[in-house]
Image 1 (tube, rainbow, N blue to C red):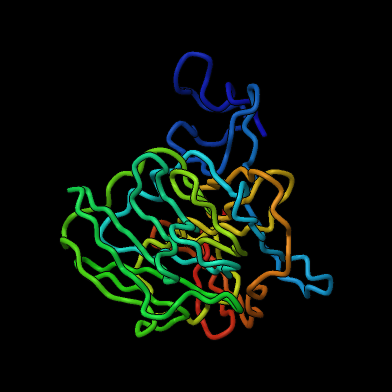
Image 2 (image 1 turned 60 degrees about the vertical axis):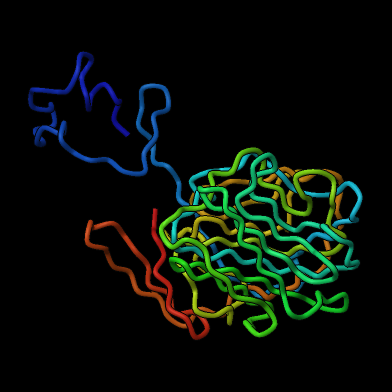
Length: 301
């Protein structure tokens, strides 16, 4: 890469022709670059490659209900959500203790909490006017298999699907025009804002900026975590002390304790059947993916 000073000049923008004879570049938009010293270097993108998992390398974490969880400062770009969103998790409880939490979005001032209450899954959502809407599953949480949890909002309407079933979950309403309360504190997975730790397996946490109409892909990894409508794709097959968020926000969580890595509750991403490169209306590169029975548009950068 050329020196940054050769592009922009030592004192403001370049106002004379480049020695190469090329046009003046002061108005050129250069994306996906970073400054290293005086040079511009390309910012490497993220590539996600599917593979046959012969060694079962994809794992979940098994929290002990005592002192194991994941947390980091909450990213309000993800969790200060508006009037349309989707939040999803895949978990498997070992015990059904009251207030055992799998998600606390804001340990000091929560916006969303998902925990157990009287052996059922409970979702509490707080809006910017401090009104709390509580959704409680009809069915008990399972202690012998996987539970998938999905909460969607479209305006006033909230839907809680347990294992892709509204009948097993719940529905509710909130004020249509209010956003969620801006959370304060940590994003915690496997623990509440105080000491109610979850005893069981946690596989993923996903957040979308639109309301999904089903949870048919609940046991499949996302093939497109960097897409513009994915604001969190947290897989808990951690490395070292970090559980990685594979979305563009990269809001990784720090693993506390040493939860066991066990077999994943879900499968790898569905086999990709077709790929096609294109551009969006702003001429940014996009990749159309046909994976399983779904179509995805992934940002490329």
